Image (cartoon, rainbow, N blue to C red; front, side):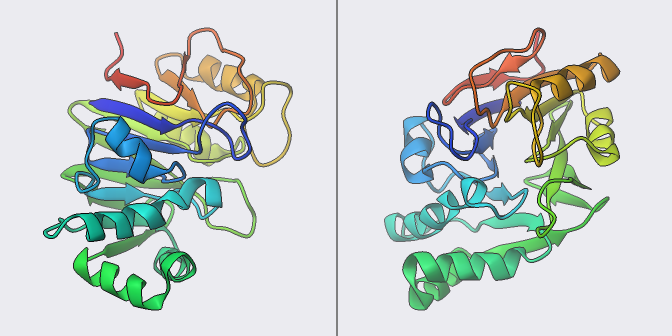
Length: 241
């Protein structure tokens, strides 16, 4: 499995772009980065991704999707279809996002041209994404939003992605279901609300010693022993050796 980080910063990070991760050039996990710039920079055309998995609706995880959707329609006459997976409310959120970004006419045109398919998920739901089995886990993050993490099984790898999360039993369940996990680590210090801190990651690593941790959504530049610290445009081949 090939994983490329198109953005690894927390929402207001001064040293990295917002969250987006590309799996095997086909699956995007979140879409906060400027994808019409970062996909080509990573050697990937705008029409290569087949699916987007949205963890929640905060701007730093979603706003790049507006550029991707209209960009691939306008720049490609025969663009392939696109599937979007996310928490409840995803279809309505995408409509509002595209209306705000480009207007209703462009939203309707791009939605139809892409044959955009939206699947809304809840805790424990399983789904198929680009031929791989996925599962959704409810994450504790923003109380007014439905927030998800995901696992996908692909090429013998069980990859977990936390999105944004606080410590919770569901987060432990996601890590337990993974052999590699891409986890947020917003805080370098003791942390605060809504996100994970370095001490939380160290606690999770102690409880799940067989799981390889890859850390993203970073608000600072500290490191954690035994974990891979993601950076923008880093590409990893999984399983890690």
